[in-house]
Amino acid sequence: MEHELTKGPVMKTMLLFAVPMILGDLLQQCYNIADTLIVGRFLGADALAAVGSAFALMTFLTSILLGLAMGSGTVFSIRYGRKDMTGLKECILASFVLLAMINLILNLLVFIGIDGIIWFLRTPEELKGLMHEYLIVIFAGLTAIFLYNFFASLLRSLGNSIVPLVFLAISAGLNIVLDLWFVIGLKWGVSGAAQATVIAQYVSGIGIALFTFIKYPDLLKKTPDVHLKKERFREITSFSALTCLQQSIMNFGILAVQGLVNSFGTTIMAAFAAAVKIDAFAYLPVQDFGNAFSIFIAQNYGSRQPERIKKGIRTAVITSLSFGLLLSILVCLFAAPLMSLFIDASETAVIAEGVRYLHIEGAFYFAIGGLFLLYGLYRALAKPGMSVVLTIISLGTRVALAYALSAIPSIGVVGIWWSVPIGWFLADALGVIYYILKVNNKDFTATT
Image (cartoon, rainbow, N blue to C red; front, side, top):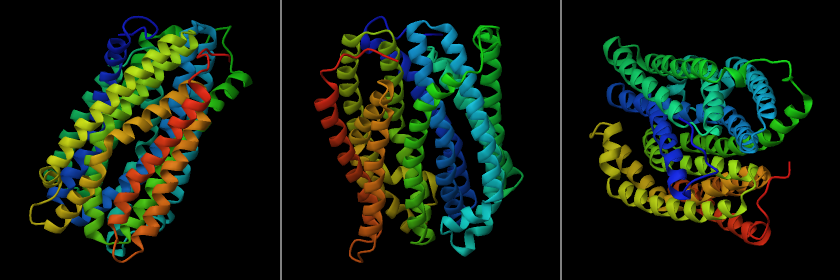
């Protein structure tokens, strides 16, 4: 089902489009949450620490493909808003070739460099075997991640956010069933958890690709008027490279912090592994609302509707901030029960540290919600460079403060937790100031 984002009531249109995206990515988080919950409860703290550390790495690798797909989706949305179908088809072709090449390079690099990756993450000696066992399987899912994110971005750019949700629902359910079977039934350990995730990822990736080819053959079929053109590569690259850079910087910063967390030992690693899953799951709705908002802005930018864009900005800010505050209240109130889902109650030190993390991070979800809106706005208005700048401010602050504060004995690991919201606030402030000074009075119409 496609939504025409350039027409109709702004709030209703945005929410109808955003809600399936939010539900879809919440289901996608079930891949890793199922691994974490089952591994933590049935394989213990060491396995949980290893899988949690691997999650940070996979998030970084996924962010490269996701950033390229999101940048491409912005171009697709603008072309679709203009009703330039030939340009849209050429951009789809160029984007697919580009992402396929990057995916191939990533696959080669991670399998060749797996031992170096484990060393970079400062993995404790007793966990290296578990990390290697998990990573060697989970890396096989990168191609599935590429397929899903490319076709999901394409469908969403056309206003169809329902189909990506359907395929994620199917594969998330499959992931949980296979996790239980492989880990508890067959006792395959962390390798079984990884195999369950990879199989489920291929179900969603191949499934959504086949659906798109069947449902939209005219967009994907090679015709005499559609060619692989250099100017389309440049157009896709100009958006995708900076969006990819933004996503990569964001997750490389998280990866660098993961290495610092690992240096504090298994208890802190296990607490972080569980808490960061809760954290990511909690603020995912405002992240996806920011992505939906970006597509809304991009389509209206392409169709040259500046007043609708301004109204959309006002509506999105109120919605995101309100929902962010609600999330903060819920996570802070239920931090301890949430941690207990992932780790046995006897692991009191792990639970206590996870609760402390969530009380610090969880109090400021409205700030990360505002930052996701700023990312989406500048990406949609053909200013992806500004999204990169905001990411550097946010993550640069986080990494620098994490290392500086945690080195002070009286602060320790708590400094890592506090570095995150401080980075959010600084980036928010810069993004808002730039909007007021450079963007607010401009005419929101596409010129490319």
